[in-house]
Amino acid sequence: MVETLKSFEPATGALLWEGATHDVDREAERAAAAWAHWAARPVSFRMETLRRFANVVRSKEEAFADLIARETGKPLWEARTEVGAVINKVEISIAAYSERTGQRSLEGALGARQNLRHKPHGVLAVLGPYNFPAHLPNGHIVPALIAGNAVLFKPSEKTPATAGMLVACYHEAGVPEDVVRLVLGGPEQGQALVGHPLVDGVLFTGSARTGIAINRALADRPDKIVALEMGGNNPILLWDTPDLASAAALIVQSAFLSAGQRCTCARRLIVRDALASPIIAELKKLTARLIVDHPHASPAPFMGPVIDGRAADGLTEGFLSLLEAGGRPVLHLKRPHGDLPFLSPAIIDMTMATERPDMELFGPLLQIVQVGDFDEGILACNATRYGLSAALVGGGPEHYEQFWAQVRAGVINWNRPTNGAPSNAPFGGVGLSGNHRPSAWYAADYCAYPVTSTEDEHLRASIAIGLAPVDTSAMGD
View 1: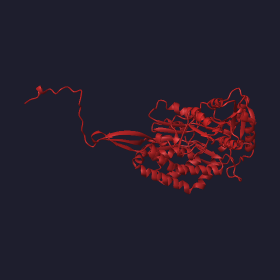
View 2 (view 1 turned 45 degrees about the vertical axis):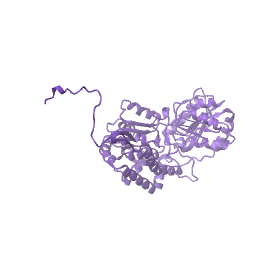
View 3 (view 1 turned 180 degrees about the vertical axis):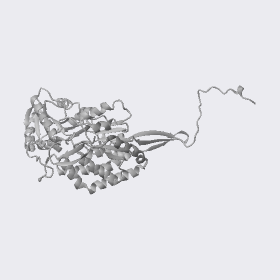
View 4 (view 1 turned 30 degrees about the vertical axis):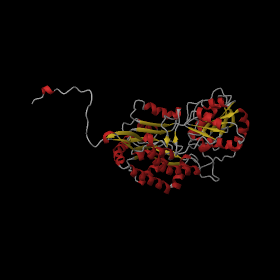
C-alpha cells in the first residue's frame, strides 16, 4: 500500500512537501542491477562525476540552504554552512580514498607481484538523520560512490524534501539514476532496507536506540558491513581559568548550537565546585542574549526550533524527569511560541540529584554536575555508556594530558567546543556512540574492502617435499 509522507516547517507549522513512500524491493532491485557497471568504471571517472556533483550543488547553493533552513528550522546562516560542507566533502573524500585505499604493488619471488587493491561491497543502504539532512548522509554517499558502490538512501521521514534535492543533484551531475536511489518512508521502509537480501551494508547516523536495533537485526549477518554513529551524552569539563566569559561562550556553543540537535553537543557541564556560582552567572547572562527565532529572521537567530512538536514534548518531559530526580533549575525549559516547537535554552543543576539518567536529551538542555577535584571530574565525565565527544575548558597541559588519557570518547578537545569536528579527520565514538567504524576521513574504510593478490604471468609450480619417490620399476623400456 502506497502511503503519503508529509514534511512541515518547524518554525511555522506550514506544509512544505508531500509525496508517496517508496517500494523497497523495487528500489533495491534497480540498485543491484546497476552497481556492477558503475564499479567497472575507472575510479578517476567516478571522482570526476562527484566533482561535477559539487559544482551542481554550488550552482544551487542559496536555494538548497533555504530548503534546509525551512525543513529543519535551523538558521539560514547555519544551513548555508551545511551546504558548504556538502560541496567540500567531495575533495575531502577523494583525498581520503586515495590515502586510505591506495593501491600497492611489491615484487615477489621469481618475478611474481604482490598487489593490494580495494573492491566495493555492492549496494549500501544509507540511513540519514534530520539534524543535518544533507551533510551527514552525503558524508556516507560520496565515499560510497567513489568506491564503486550503489546507494539506497533513506532519509529521515522528517526531512524528505532536502533528501530529494540532494539526490537530484547527484543525478544531474551524471551519477546514473539507478546507482543512487531515494527511498522515502518511515520505520517500516528502514527495517526493510536493513534486512533486504540485496543490501550488502548499512551506514547509519541517528539515535542509539535505532542503531542498537540495526545491530541486533544483523547479528547473524557478518557478511554485511555495518557502520553506526549513534550520538552521545557528552561532557564538557570546566577547570581553573580566569576567563569565565570565554568559557561561557564555549559552553553555550557546545550545548545550544543547532538548538542542541547535534550528536556532539555538550549535554553535561562538569565543573569545579569553586567555579560553579561564577560560571552559572556568566551562562545566565550570555544565554539571556541568545536569539531564538525562525530561520530567516533579522537579526539572525543563534538557534531555531527543534524539529517538531513531538521532539519538543519529549524534551519537556525529560526536563521534568530531571526535576523529579532532584535537579535544581537554573534556567527553565520554556515553549515561547505556543504549539510551535521553539524551546528556550535550559540549564539544570544535577549535583544533588538522587539519580542522573544516562540518556541523550537531543535538544537545548544542559545539566550541571559540581565536583571537588580533577579525578572526580574525570569520573563524572565517564559516567555514561556513550563516548562520542568531550572537551576540557581551562586547566593546564598536565590537566589536558590526564583528560585525554582517561576520558572515553572519539573526539577530545581542549579549550574548544565539543561540537564541530573537522571533516579531514576521522569521526566516531565508542560505547553506545558507535561500533568502531568512524566516518569522515575514515569513511573509505567501510565503503571498500581490501583484496590482496599474488600474481604471476607465467604458470610454474612444483612440490619439493612430501612426495614418494617415483616407482621406475613399473616403467617400460
